[in-house]
Length: 567
Image (tube, rainbow, N blue to C red):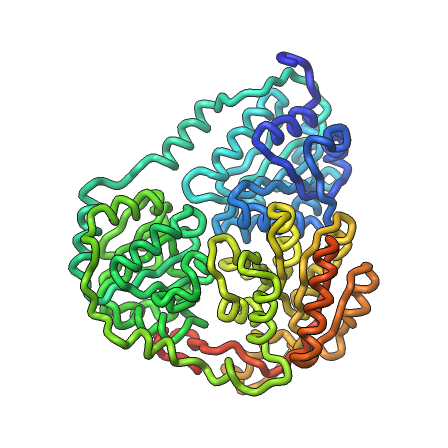
């Protein structure tokens, strides 16, 4: 097999298999015709999932990666196929997801001539990838694929893109399996993964922590990505310190642990937000201080020293100034800090944290025919503690973060920084393919689901048993909520009453079992029926009728300190 001549298409597929890729999500077209021919030839060695839209190929690869920790791979043709990936690539970039996007392009001789379905996809995606390549010479293809996987996974993970002109896929060149990286790939890996901190940095951090009497741990998505959940728990228990979680940090710390105060920020709990504002030391772990967390920067944690630990030095001092920082692998750094700390630390927190945890918005427990809290908690109980919960973006996203009992990393998948409506169904099917033995539930809204409902065809085609729970309030709920609070209830272009569709009939058109629930009894019956569908390897839908003015609370109005919440 060594030194045998392969086409570029064959080299690409062999290179993906060499990297351990078992699934590619994509949609065919003219410029990737020969890649698809090779996928057909190698279909016993690598699986292809045909989506209904390229954007959802990117989201599916994203969900595959977020839930498994392995890179996800998506494939699209040139022109509109390539540009349809952009939203998914951007969502992966801001949430630090290792994604390999592969696009076709016109032949090298036609580049730059406004040829049919030609776009400069490397130029378009430059701001939203860690790196991208256009491979104009077949001799470079295998090396570029190897380098792409190194770049996507090294340091702070993220998306990369490989653009391959059509004639490169038909050219022939020798190929042999190799674990040898190019010099550039080796340098990148070494630079991204080397320790950039010193023993003095660790000593200073340990001294700050030991001196503190009211420390708070602010845990972000970096805890999940680095596999540092155990170290986070050990540190919290050592310090007897409350743990506040960003949206991307959900699952990094068990929701039912007595030190967990829940989400922080715009829709954070009273306990998390008040604790941060009263702390004397805020230890940020794999978190980037997004505006949805900090709100008014000048009054965020204004009594606290800030210790910021993150793998990406660009995030340190970007939004919030730190008094001390360490840049590097979070799991490694926490182990080093823990070794420097006493077995137990005194704390200045008395009963305040528990008192603040008891502050619950009335809306969470008010009377309703069917409250989102009931739906989410009963779904979690029915599917089990290992369930991967996926969301689209909007009210249902925050309800899921508030009410789902997350206990483990990589069990909450949501478009955090990008906030991409339509993310959910693709991500859910990617997560299920990566974790076939784990239940997967998508919580979505009526507005979001209309952006991705065609992927029900994908679920049916490949027998992907995902439970879809649609919160139907006949409106764009989060925007309507903002219009209520900030626009004197001038509701405009958010009402969906006359837009349809009938989701039960729509699901039936795709041959997906569907139920409609308007109260607790009908929901529990629907949930039981759906469990039977899932057990048979089939997807299922429950449309949940929700009051149009059901709100997400607490909420911090824009520009206000995070402890000034609407409850």
